[in-house]
Length: 497
Image 1 (spheres, rainbow, N blue to C red):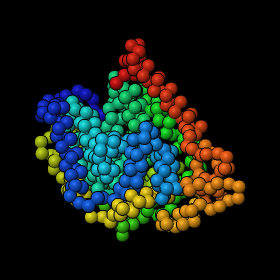
Image 2: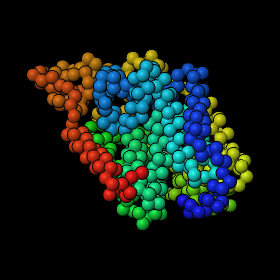
Image 3: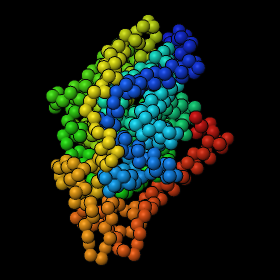
Image 4: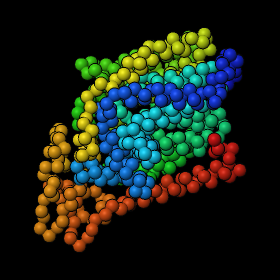
């Protein structure tokens, strides 16, 4: 997927516009574009459709916990009408640290979410520019396309996918680190941190990036396979503080609710099923189509490896490989289209590398950007009610305790709380109006309601579980190892970057 450097020098770099390699030009332009991409949200009612509502519920409580000095909030006490939810024992927290920072400086919860999206757009553009700078004729154009590509923009306007939007920004950083490893210019530490960043932000995209980007890139440059493996292993170690509790405590939440409906399962999105009665499905396949159409010219005429890779990934997203998305792990990502950021990154790279007429990248990107222009207007979708969110903090079903929901049911929040508030009376015990979780210092689940039940002589409080302690120790160890390696002169050449 990388052409030799001398080929860049002879075919591309000699004719590239010098201004596109200047940070003093690229940074302001890309940051301005990020602001413009989110600016329409300022002229419409608050966007609370799809995942925006849960973004608000989580960000509101996460920021509040940060303000109390809790640097890694895991339990959200206001969720589910005060019954609580263990969201961040299972969900990566980094994007909510970002929105939390905006909240701590005085922005409202909703404004902090929009600011987090803007920061994610800007970060993705700047990171992509660094990936392309000195290696492509149109680095600013490529970075701008990556920011405004249809799926990337749809993550904001259509889905409200705050975490996935930020995770996309780590793809170019990961690519930079792996390129340094492949070129024997260090890169292990940089790759490890970037890999840890994407895991700590959005686990499904991290899994897809591992399988469809990191693994093939490492195999393509297999002479450095040991260094690639070291970077991946170190990245996993850095995020053990999140991964170990998420895996060890999985049985304490209702993970099956992630797949309770047909559209939440990967086979629903296969081209062979063609659920074209769903407008969302049509939108996804249109995004796949415009990605492939834009990549065809450089893939065929220039034999560009990145363009070919973009086409392959787009076809995989469409489900053209039978049974692929039914494999273990892959079927757990819910939506195959989550792999599209990899295709858009590859397409941005291919367009930026075009050495032909200056207008060609714009012409090839035209259909995709026209679709983006339609997507950015998509603020008319049905939204939840802000006062209801603020009063009740409804949370998603998958973080309820097991056995709270019956199979196939989709109750309203009032249905969940009706039999639990006030808590039932149990002779000789105290039943608290919060869900049980093993982080409580004492108590057991009340069998009928799954609320926290304890003896009168103890006062439950949240404490670190054993998996959290183990994960934190592992992360601290790997952070120390990487820090030490980065500053040891004898190792700097091997690891740095």
